[in-house]
Length: 308
Figure 1 (cartoon, one colour):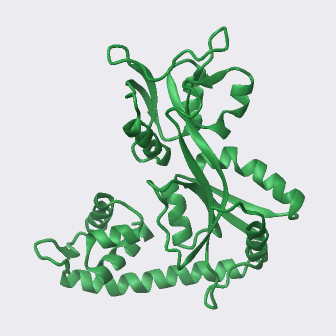
Figure 2 (cartoon, one colour):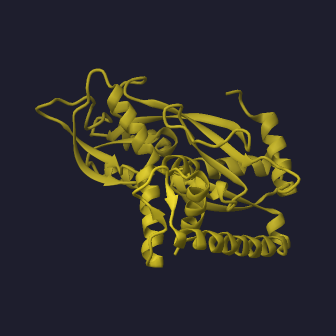
Figure 3 (spheres, one colour):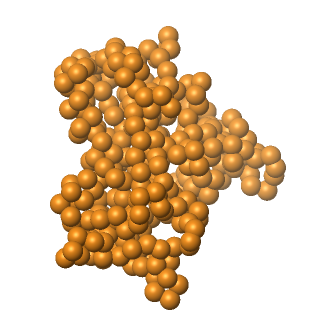
């Protein structure tokens, strides 16, 4: 059993609505329903009466609800106690970051902070965007760094979470260079000759960005999917080996473009999308003041951040 199942169930009991709870838990409704079903399978009993509307909890579900509250309280209490008892933790900033940004943005960003802000002790938690957001929501990190786009927003309550804009970057199509330094493949392809396409999985945030590019494409893009992964670094390696076209963040291919290993598969401004790089924290409160080092860093970054 996973603790997030307990949190899911508690949310469902309190909202009495699968859709609302899925939204609050930052998951799709089908994924949320599967997690509730997994909890029921683990317990061996139905917790929710699915024959009624609005959603009604079964008698067994009400008994488990009380136990779930107690269990989560104990787990969170122990975690908070251990964190508070570790002196080093108070000076360590826990960062939840999507895999791509952990490889491209974080190293240079931390170098600049060490130079201009001062020495930092940090712990990086590299995850997909969805799980990185959950780390912040569930108190598993101090800061969340992630991509954002208005059509695929990170849905965090602005009344509870602070945000800083740290930069922007484009997601563009790249292909291996030929002997003349030109891309081996060029968009848009043709219906009778689609381009070999290196794709993100459907659950990947960058994959949803590519879907927007394809949906808006004029003229249309023609692809023949040859490979799929949720890691931009994996797509880059496949593109370097000449397997097809991949949409990659510009920062992920800076060196390869400079060395003429990869090249843009389209003209600048065509078939691309710009994303914001955002930093989030839970707003400090009397009950949860947060770490002093995080507050100091946030104040420094707020003074340096570009306007949205």
